[in-house]
Amino acid sequence: MKIYSPYKDYYDSVLAYGQDDHIVYHRKQEVIAKEESQMPSEVVELVKKIFSDSIGSQYRRQRPVILFVGVAGKLYARWYLYDEGTSMSSELLSHQSGRFFTLESFQEYDRQKTIEEQWHHRYTMDVVLDRRDKILVRALEELSVFRNDQLFIECNCPILIIRIGPLVELRSVQSKRRYEIIKNPRLANLKMESDLDPFTMMQELEMYLGNQLSTRDESALTTGSDEDIARAKGFDEQSFRTSAPGNKKLNRKKNRERKKGSD
Image (cartoon, rainbow, N blue to C red; front, side, top):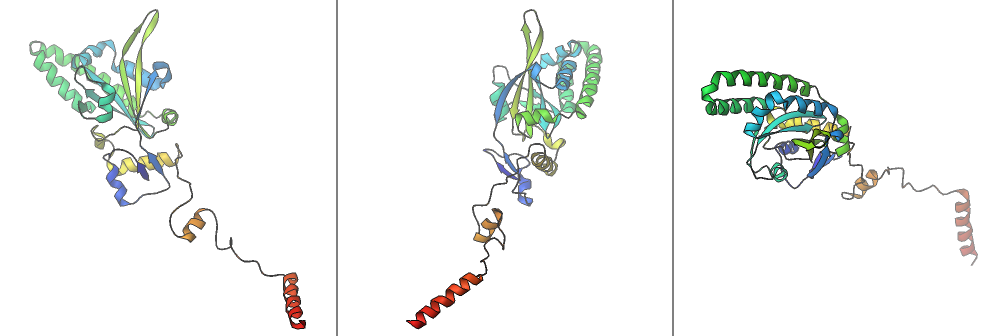
């Protein structure tokens, strides 16, 4: 696979072990805003469970943002803690600030912070956190079997991030969330190695680009020897074969020689 990109990522090192030059990945970042109605229903329902009123207040205290990292039709959950007053889009694109957590690491961090701040209600907070964690685990079990190629095909990219925004209060209409899709994000700081090592990631990308997204580079070669270029354009050793002369040509040659002799 050939990768054209303005940045490096954690799986790029695998390219040194050989690549299929016919598969091309143009890794260019782009941000797309989507309404709730434009998102897969499985994602919307999962978000509602994670941010339900029974556990949402605990998350809002830490101001986390849940991200779904999409790779080759599958989704992986990440939590992102950011500082107030920062731009989410620019941070996610640059990955220069903020902290990313897997489910387990965020639960551990959040539990410790909650107990430190609510030490006088420690037993009560343990019960609340245990209940919340069970809800999360059940919700993310559903995520583990999620697969939606259509979203990736619509975005025309094998890697994306789905960022879930806050609820938008609408008059006379049920509150909805806004979503932001970041195409071809850099994954180096998202702890994706815990789910996909570099070799597995590269294999997933090559298979997805070569099948669902069909980004094979079928253009003819423009560099190399004349023989290589000719073969890339569909010619073979029979294409430029000289035709054997017919009787008419042979007779014409004899007539010319006879005419010269008579002169």
